[in-house]
Image 1: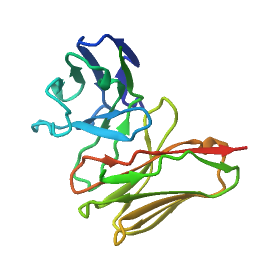
Image 2: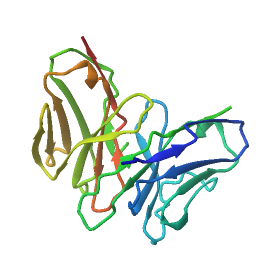
Image 3: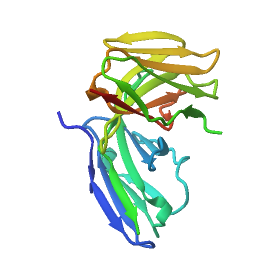
Length: 116
Length: 110
């Protein structure tokens, strides 16, 4: 079946511009996550959506970052007034989010953002 | 100090050798321990996970967790060139948020 998809795969923007990154999770997955991976670094948690609950925004680095999830499916990560330090790969993951104690997160291929 | 520390490598080994990877962590609340493999320009994929301390084996891969020393390991036996990738350890407590190490780049030379 289809995995997690993200668009665009690459985005080059100028400093100060706003960007929107999109994530389509696996159908039926109730949990959705955004991570950021800077060059040569591990993944940094940004935000987590679980069903209709309020999202866990504890990883967002500044108020320039926001995310929404419409209809419990597709999610958009928005970065306003981009800065050069925002350049990274932004990865989305989804999981079943059910009652199991371990829910495997399935990752998309990421969006590579370059801020000039 | 990062919650999960991992040597960035690169780690270069000849084909057929054993690859030994490890991470240390600081948060005693972590209960699940995972290893992900990430190929260049791809998203990470889960290799193995373990709950609490102990060993887990899956084919050529063995994961070990020692909670007393907060140390987790991954061993790859009979390494193949196709194992060349970045390996990320990850941990989580009771919730769903993962905390990752920085990743170790592995190169298996034919």
